[in-house]
Length: 421
Image 1: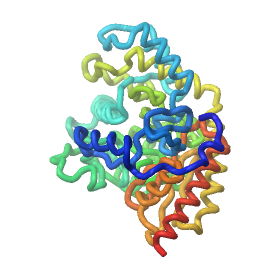
Image 2 (image 1 turned 120 degrees about the horizontal axis):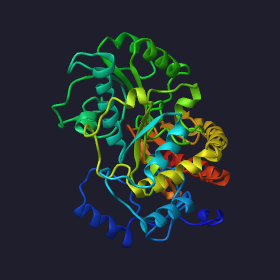
Image 3 (image 1 turned 135 degrees about the vertical axis):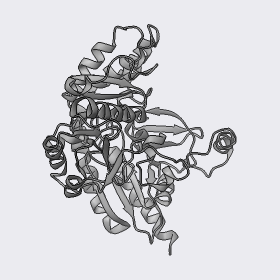
Image 4 (image 1 turned 180 degrees about the vertical axis):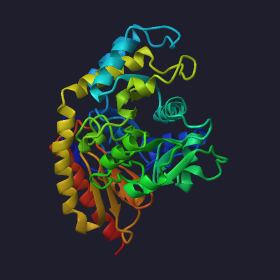
């Protein structure tokens, strides 16, 4: 799968044979909480994956950024294999020889003092919320059980009861209540609305610097600087959820770096595990992180030795700046190509680095329709919120891969137009 010419040959067959068998088996035994495209993948290298029928596809979802470094990156696989033969788990009841090194290097990469390691992104968000509330009571002096967190309309931070309770997406919150109190939502990108919502009981402001699940929604320039200024002025924690946007995706190590701001609490995940296992972390300086004491928070698997080995390898890849530069340069190529397709069925395009949200003209179909059409042209992508398709290829793509994506998108839009005639 190293070349590109072979990816242009032929088309996937209709869903039958071995593909249909796998899909039927999964449908029979796995809870129906996803609506995947009709493709069964079995192998991946770099930005390309193969299905059980032998077709190859360019992966333009990259596990929602968990696969920023592609499938089976040799440095990450080697780190995992070596550690598997040594030690995988001790629990935090004991020290192990990689946790300190991992925390030190990740903290240095992000410009923070301290790291609290967890597993999934959702766990890390919940951890950050607990940290902010504890800080609000123990440092800011908010009365007991009165602390509030301001969140944004259109947010997506995970799927626990606590988190979906402050979502405004009915698909993720309907019929899961009652929900915990203590959250107030304001429009994303509106600094005046945020200023009006802050009061003496506000402990933190939680936001995604770029909203991923909402469709790669980029706030107005200067908004993050305004959030930083408001949080500093009112003694409120700025909590940045960079689970999708961080670790090179947008062309910088962190999306907040585009505006030169530093949050008080940083949440990382997805790409931190290299697409190999779940790894997440909450980072802060000690004046914030120090409010938590032994026994107040924990995780059996958080900071395990295998996770630290892979996480260290991820940090090493990012320390050189190579992947941030690739996302910048190839992101410009992607953005230019998408702009050329605007008149072929796209109503809006939002791009930052190797991350884009494109809105399909409703006259042509839905985002799901476009993803199904892309599948026939060997491009894997994911729709969201009806008309939007998210594009987030691994940072290991090259210029030919970006052109393959753009050619496939042009052809898929043409297919939708032809189907409506």
